[in-house]
Image 1 (cartoon, rainbow, N blue to C red):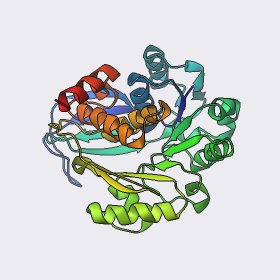
Image 2 (image 1 turned 120 degrees about the horizontal axis):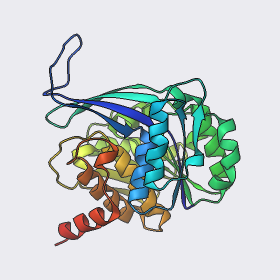
Image 3 (image 1 turned 30 degrees about the vertical axis):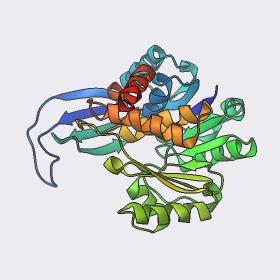
Image 4 (image 1 turned 90 degrees about the horizontal axis):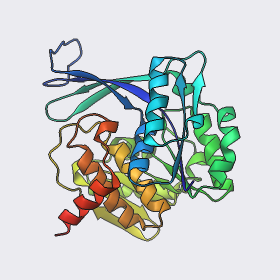
Amino acid sequence: MKLVVVGSSNMDLVISLPRIPAIGETVLGGKSSMVFGGKGANQAVASKRSGGDIAFIAKVGNDLFGENMKNHFKREGFQTDLILTDAIEPTGIAQIFVSEKGENSIAVAPGANMKLMPKDIEPFTDLIKNSKAVLLQLETPLETVEYIADVAFQNKVKLILNPAPAQKLSKNLLKKIWLITPNETEASLLTGIEVKDASSAVKAAEHLLKMGIKNVIITLGENGSLLCNEKGSEHFKAFKAKAIDSTAAGDVFNGTLAVAITNGESLQEAINFAAAAAAISVTREGAQPSIPSRTEIENFLNLEQR
């Protein structure tokens, strides 16, 4: 496998509303749906659909949601023996509100995701050692992330970390990261520098480089993204798209970015490919249902280049 993704898998309970409710407010809205989600699973599926040679390791509960997920991953073409089951904790659940503007608000009960421990990863260390890159997020225990980072670093495997949800990370972990992909909020928390425009994004990225990270991509939503490494900084514009639901846009970006990197593309080419995939995803509802195929991404890029 060129790429190993380790992370969360949730059942998303989605409610579409005219607007996101304020505290104490009840908003009567439109339809509800159950959608496969979780940052790890979203990124893994995005990687798979974009043509990646990928393995996905996760943990679900011994319940109906967990069983449905295993069947879903089998249909997507994953090895289901890498989808582990926790005997006690239920499958992770995310409650998602989506507004008419495409904005979202998310609450997560992580369940079995937080039981994915280093001892669960040990049987699969050869998979990680022999890969070109490993992609992680922060919806599983931090000690598991650190364990995988050690394995990757010791074996010269590129570690890509999407530091979401935002939290402080140790210097020991940061120096083992080949590429980190925070959004503005996450970059602000990691560096103490408020990211509010391109200039402050550069300052935050440079701060992360000083911590030992090799490459930084700060995603800026509709303002595109910023790449920063020892060669300097470069801004990439976002593709224009009419947003319906932005729930998994960041995950789509990360999953497709990782595939492009493991396929030998430059970071600039990878960012372009990932930005196209994310632009397609926001025009569709749901997390994994919004994820495009490689053909769709390539067709989109071809149209943009005309």
